[in-house]
Structure formats: structure tokens, C-alpha cells
Length: 330
Image 1: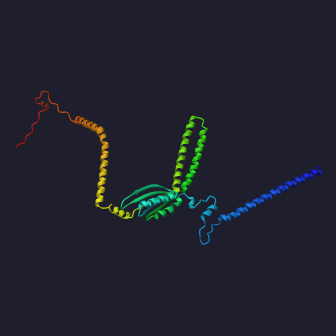
Image 2 (image 1 turned 180 degrees about the vertical axis):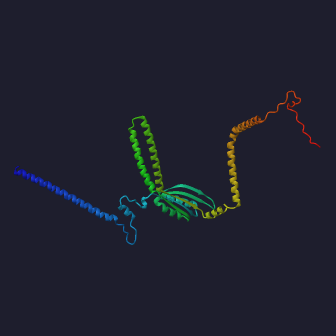
Image 3 (image 1 turned 90 degrees about the horizontal axis):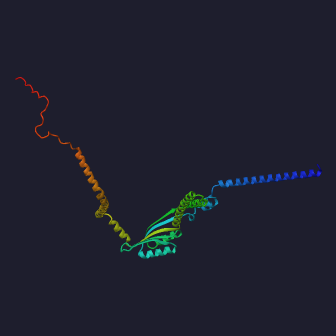
């Protein structure tokens, strides 16, 4: 071995040792950094949310954005169906109805139903208005200002969970439809083709049903419904008189007579429907039953007694004569 060869081997060994030391140092530094990060994060996770100054609760939206996968509790992100019913007494029913139509049109909605009744004491107009959900409250307050509000009822229905569930089901069903289409494209035999076509049709029908439900929910959440009834100034008096006319002996008598006539009409209708069947089937069956009963009676009657041929006296008994009874001594 020469001196140059020994020197080269020593240098190689020194380089290998230096690389091993560098790798070990890097691994220790990484482990210490990971442990420091985990140790610093654990207290932060365990620390409770501090209340704001003055006793105010922390912002839920901020806490929801800080956490991963936390639900969004903001109202504007939820699917809510608003429906309202109200009754307003006005001086001019027709004028109030026209103003309501103009208001809902200006708000970006439309009239879903319109029923009006003109009378001296009980003029009435009932409108079904569809308005965007964002302008629901403002339109209700505007309609209440047309006159004197007598009744208001607001109902809400949160369909956020149902909407999310429909979205997930629609996504899954679309994937199933695509899978069935791919299998149908690779079908080799007629039997496979028919089976896959039926399966694809069923899956597409289920997908269409889910999408229809989603569109219905979207329509109800996007457009709220307000049913407003405008009544005239004398509507309250007319309603009280109508309520008073609903009680009393004559009211009960008229109601009972109406029910009796309705019952008789139903009974005669049923009888008229059954009469052709009774004539075609009932009469022959009744005649057959009568004939069978007569034959049974004839069979059950005993035969008449048979006498001697040619008449005359009946034959004398052939047994011994009766023995006279003995008399007792006087």
C-alpha cells in the first residue's frame, strides 16, 4: 500500500463521517421543532374561549372560521322559508289591492293568487304575494301601513339540513348515473344491454326526483309567501252579525234538514245504482229459491194411507178374542 492510497482512504472515511454527523443533527433539530410545535399547540387547544370585555359572548362567526369543519351559523347562510298571513282593514279595498300589487312588483316579486269580493258591508280582497326573502319583512310592514292591521302571523321553517342532504344525495346519484352509463357503453350481450338500460333509467328517474325536490326548496327559500286580506270598514260588524247568525234553534233546524236531504239523496243514489242489478239478478234468484222450497216441502210430506181394493169393511183382526173381565161377588 502506498502513502497516496492511504491518504485517499482516510479522506473518504472522514467525508462519510462528516455527512453522518450532519444528517443526525438535522434529524434532531426536526424532532425538537416538532415537539416544540406540538407542545405549544396543545395549551392553545385546551385553553377555553375567553369572553369579551363587558360580559359579551364571543363572535360565533369568528370562532367558526377559526375551527376547521365548524358549521356556519350565520343566518344569511341558512335556508329558511318565510310565510306570512295578515289581515288589514282599509277604507278602499280595491285601492289597497292595487297598491299591494304595485309594491310586490317593485320589490321583484309577483302575485300568486287574487280573490276579491265586492259588497256593501264586507268588501274583501285576498292576495297571495311572492316576494324575495330579503324584502319579506319590509313588505309586510308596508302592507300593514295601508290601514289598521287586525291580525299578523309569521312562520319560519329552517330547511338547511334538508338542503345539504339533498345536495349530497344528488351528487351521489349523479355518480351512480355516470357509472351506469359507462357500464352500458361496455355491454357485450343483449341481456346485459337490457339490464343496464333498465338500471340506468331507474337511476335517472331517482336523480330527476331529487333535483325536483331541490328546485322546490330553492323556490320556497328564494321567494317568500305573504297572504294578505284587505277588508272594508264595516267588515268587523258584518263578521259579528254572521257569527251571531250561526247559532240558534232555526239554524240547527236548517242544518238538520240540510243533512237529512243530503242523506236521502245519497240513499236514493245508491238505490238507483243497485236497482238494475236487483232486477237482472235478484228476480231470477228469488224465483229459483221459491221453486226449491216448494220441492223440499213436497218431499217432506208423508204418503197417504193405503186402503183395501174395492172398498168394504176393513179385515177382521186375526188375533184371539179379548177375554171378558171377571166380576166380583156381590
